[in-house]
Image (cartoon, rainbow, N blue to C red):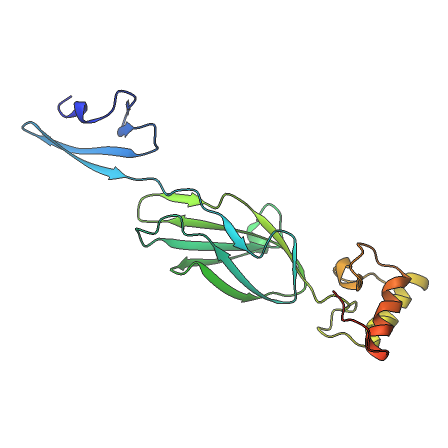
Length: 200
């Protein structure tokens, strides 16, 4: 067709345009005399999630950051934050049409997954990762947003009296050794009454 010589040899036709090897999409609008008029869509490059790093422990106030996939164009972003690994709609918050590559949110205690969608008027691109984070205050075994003697009592009840575990098990892991044991009880007592280090 007229104007096809403008495309590279590896460009192949589709019912509504031409697709090149770089992902650039050319959609033919019209042909008038010997001129071809087309829309050219340049793909949004891959981009990464920056912070929080994967599997981070952050007490409640979280700042999300991601890289800029296209510094030459103003994109919009949708941030998805979910307690579901598969981003079930019932457990996912979507902060849409963001113009900044940073968003601050306050999260309840729990394990969260997050990803970002970048888009313009014609093309979208998802972040190249999905990351997880734990919104938790280490040592806050009873989930009341502070570390007190009540957390020591809560851990003692859990470990020795059949009481319930922490809402997020990692909250009771005050010494960050990956387990909830009597060592965490001792660690909290040292912190609260003997000037020991804060929960990690």
